[in-house]
Each structure stands twice: as structure tokens, then as C-alpha cells.
Amino acid sequence: MSTIPPRPAGDYTIIIPAYNEERRIGPVLESLKGSAGFFLVICDGHDHTPELVEHFALQNPDLRIKARRYDQRLGKGGAVKKGFALAGTPFVGYMDADGSTSIDQMIQLFASLDHADGVIGSRWLPESVIPIPQGISRKIQSRLFNFLIRILFGLSFKDTQCGAKVFKKEAIDAVLDKMTSTGFEFDVELLWRLDSAGFRILECPITWTNRDESRLRGGEGLGMLTALLRLRRNG
Image 1 (cartoon, rainbow, N blue to C red):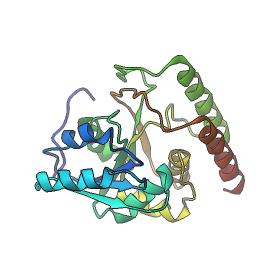
Image 2 (cartoon, helix red, strand yellow):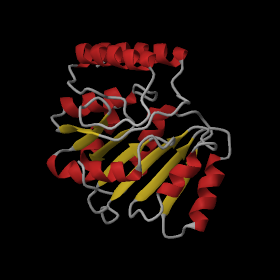
Image 3 (tube, helix red, strand yellow):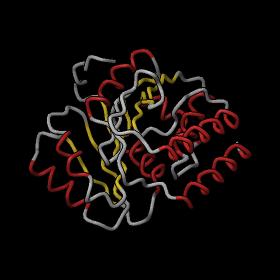
């Protein structure tokens, strides 16, 4: 995927989960200028992220972007599910609010949906470009996590957690009601549900930049593991 294809003519929606992202979301918003699709920023924190998005939307009337505010904590997965339910386009996807993946990278993923029902960015393919890599401890954790996912769910993907994924909306609609995860384990369940339903998911190399401020803390990591074990047990 070395050549950036033309951007789709507005037939996609990108969801951006944004929990207290007022310090980081500005550059991401700027990068969306000129994009043809729809953007839903799902805000479930208590800072000024929604106001920043709304102000940006007023300053850029040609950009179709909205902020949705929720008083309760949704979790990453819960925020993405809200976005999926709101999206009215034939293609949907989600990206992180920290700018680790660019909008052009997302468009490249959308362009690959001609050959699959879903396309996910992967940091662990040989062709991927990682200008600022993760630290060694995070790399080890990531590989151990991936090994566990292969054992528990039989998924062959090298990277289930990269925050850059796109899908045909009809595939999402087929599994959304079955989804129970609301945290960071959401990505695994979504891929598992789609795979189990017979949908084809491609894993593609991506350019991805590590950001210092991870949203996944130690306690949340344990909770994520517990949720995945419960999910696998209950099906």
C-alpha cells in the first residue's frame, strides 16, 4: 500500500473515541480538513473535547464532523459501538484520537474493502512503518497478548489492537447485537464475531506512530484479560 488512492466520495464514517482528549485531539482534527467522509467523535469524558470539536466544525463547515457527548463512561468499545449504531454510510471505521494513525492511512484501508468485509491495520507486518516504536516492555506484552488471543479465539491476526480498522457496514450490522465488550477487549471480540460469522478480514501493513500517553493502565490490562476469558467461556 505505497500509493495513497483517491479518497472515497463521502461513503464512509470514521468513529473517533475520545475520552478526555482535549490535549491531543487538535492535530487530529486539523488533519481531517478536506476529507470527504463523515466523522463522529464519541466523547464520554468530563473535559472540553466536545466543545473543541464543535468549535472546529463551525470553523470548517465543509467538513462533516459531529461530537456526541455521553455523561456515562462508555469505554473504548462502548464508544465505537455507539458510533457504529449512528453511522449511516456503507463503510465504517475507527481510529485513535491521538493521531497514531493518519487519515490517509485510513483511506488506504477503506480502498482495500473491495477485497474483503473488513481491513485492519497491523504494526507487526514486515512492510509496516513505525517511525516512533513502542518500548521493549510494551512489545513483549503485545506479543504475549497476541499469543493468548491465538490460543483462546483461534484468530491468526498478528495485531488485533491497532486502532485503525475499517469495515463494510453490512458486516458490522450482522454482529453488532451480539457484541458485549465495552473496553479495550472490544477489538478482539469484534474480529472474533466477524470471523465466526464467515466474513473475510484482511490484515494490512500500516504507518503507525507510538504516542507516549497510553490509555491502557496496568489494572485495566488485568480487567481486559478477565473480560476476554469470560467472553470465551460464555461465547
